[in-house]
Amino acid sequence: MPAGHFFRRVEAFKLDGQIHTYSGACNHCAQPGCVDGCPTGALYKAADGTVQHHAGKCIGCGACIWNCPYGVPFLSPTTGISQKCDTCADLRRAGQQPACVQACITHCLHFGESGEDAITPVFLPDNDVTTPALRILPGKRQQAKQVQISTRYRNDTHETFLVLGGGVAALSAAEAIRQRNQTAKIILISAENALPYSRPMLSKAPLRGFKPQPFQIQDASWYAQHKIEVWLETGVQALRPAARQVCLHDGRVIDYSRCIYALGAQSYIPPIAGAALDGVFSIRTLEDISALRRWLVQPRRAVLIGGGVIGLEIALELKKYGCDVTVLESAPMLMGRVLDDDSSRQLAAQLEAKDIAVHTGITIDTLCGDSRVSGVKLNDGRTVGADLVIVTCGIQPNSSLAQQAGVETRRGIVVDDNMQTNFPGLYACGDCAEWQGTNLAVWSEAMEQGRVAGANAAGDPERYHSVPAAVLMNGAIALYAEGDTGKSPDVEQQVFTSTHASRAAFLVNPLSAQHCVERYFFKNDTLVGGVLSGDLTQMRILSQSIKDKLTKRTFLEKINAAR
Image (cartoon, rainbow, N blue to C red; front, side):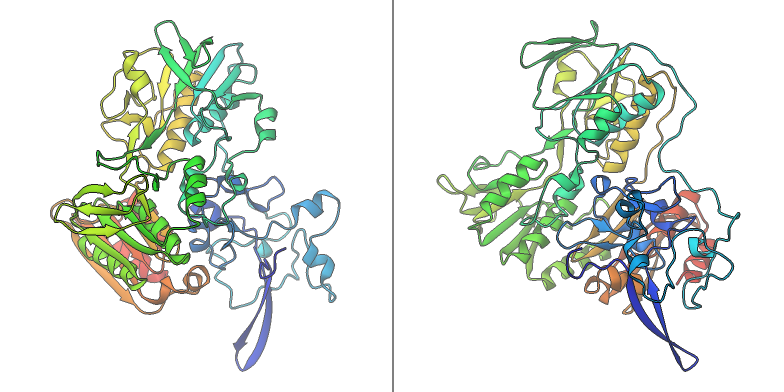
C-alpha cells in the first residue's frame, strides 16, 4: 500500500493506571453504521459477511466515517474517495489469510468466526452501537443487511429496452430491468466516451491527481456479466414515442418496447457577455474536468460564479494550488436555499479565513477579455481580475428532445409516481425529470428514480417516494444540512456550540472540527431540519430523526445521549 495508508493501526490507552495497546481495523460489523449511512451503496455487506467498498460508487462524502464509531474509514487525499480494510479480499481469493494475520508474530490476529475467548477492549464503543463482528459468537451471527435491491418480481421476455443517458439514473434503470427480466435486450446509449461515473466526485476529487477510472460506478465486466449493451459516443437525434422509436445521430433508427429517458442535464450558463471566452468553464462532465486541468498550468486568479456546493468545493481545491480565489454569488447569502442565515454567515467566514474572497448580492455585467478571459466586470463598475472563471449556477434539464416529440414538459419532463410520461412505454428519471413539480437534481434522487423507472418498465409497479434533500461538504470545510432550516414560518431553532469535536471528527477533518456548531429546527414541536458544521458525527441521527418526525424532547434526549 502507499506510504501512510495503513488500514490497521495500533493505539495506546491508559486505563486504571495501566497502558493498554490495541490493534484496530474494520470490525466488519453485523449492523454496520457505515453501510446504513452510505448514500450511494458504495459500502455493502458481501456474501462472506465482510463489509466491502465499491470505489466506483463512492462520492467521497465521508458519511461512512461519521457513521463509524471506530473511525476506521478515511478519505484518501490522492483519490478523494473513502478507503477501509477489506480483509485482503484478493489474498483470500487466492486461498491465503489477510496480510495482517500472516504478519502477526504473536498470532493474536485471526480471521474467521470469533470464539468465546475473543477479547473486546473496554474502551471501544458499546456493543449496542453497531454489533461489531468480533463480539458475535459462533452460531449467533445476525443476518447481514443487503444493500442491493431484492425483488421477487420476474418476467423474462424478448423485448428491447432502450436506456438513454450515461448517468446514475440510466445505470440504475438498466440494473432494475435486468433484475426482473433476465432475457430481454437492454441497450444503454450515452453521448459521453466513458462508462457511467460518479458526477459528485468531479468537484470533490483532487484536480491535479484526478483519474477517471476509479469513479466508474461499474467496470466494463459488470455490463458484460449483466448482458447490458453500452453504446458510447452515440448521440440521440430525435424521439418518436408514438412509434416507439429513437433516431440516432448516425442515422440509425432503433425500435424499442420500453424506453427510459435519462439524458440528465447540462450546466446552466447565464446569458453573460463573454461567456464563450477561453478560460471560462463549467463543471458537469469528465471532459469539463480534463479541460480545466489543462488550463490550471498558468492561472493564478480564479473566480467562481455561484456559491453552491460545487462552486465552493472547487474554490477550496483551487486554493490548494496557490490561486487567488474569489466567489461571486448573486443571492444575498451563500446556499440560501438550504442554510439558515447564521449558518450561511459562518460558512462565509470559514471561507474568508482560508483567504477566499466571498461577495454576495452580486450582479455580473460582462466577462472581460479579447480571446482569453481577463476579468469579471460587475454592475457596480468594479472589475475582479481573473485568469480562470468557473460558472456553477445550477443545471438546465436536457428535455428538449422530449419536448419536440410532444412529451409533456415544464421545468423538466413531467412524470407520475411510476416515472411514466404521458406516452405509454416511455419513462423519464433523474435530472431531466420533474416529479410533483420538483426536480432536486441530487444524486440520491436520480439513483432512486432510475430504479423505480426501470422496475415499472419491466412490469413491476413500484412507486417513487421523495428522497431527503441534503447538502454535504466534507473537504477543508465540513458541513451538512437537511430539511427545513427555518425557511417556513414559525420554525424554532436550537443551537449547540462547542470547541471540542468527537474523535471521529478529528480523524476525518481535524482543521474543520476545531469549531463545531449544531443547529436543529423544530416546527409544531417536531424536528424538521438541521445544520451541522465542523463535526458531522450526528449526521445519521439527524437524518433518521427527521424521517421519524421525532418530537423536540425525544430528539434532544436522543442527541444528548449520543454525545
